[in-house]
Length: 79
Image (cartoon, rainbow, N blue to C red; front, side):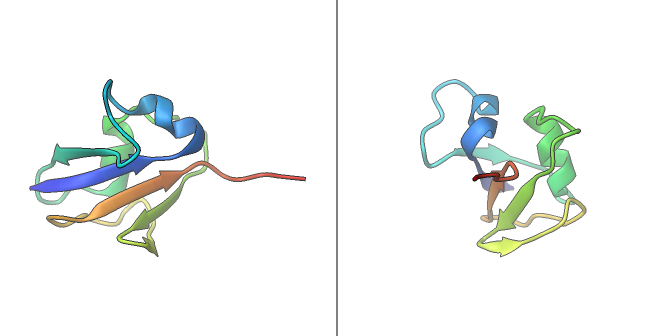
């Protein structure tokens, strides 16, 4: 099944070559979780992730479905 993955800020460096601002469309198997997607893109395990699926916050054990958009952000700090 196809989903779209968007990585933001410092996570953008983990997108494949040629991926644009709209992220990348990938094929995943049924039962794929957000944690599986983090592993596919080799996102650092020791960095907190803020993840939205179709605009709603989800935890890493969430199972994605056909056509969803996964947006992953690193923690945001400011001053």
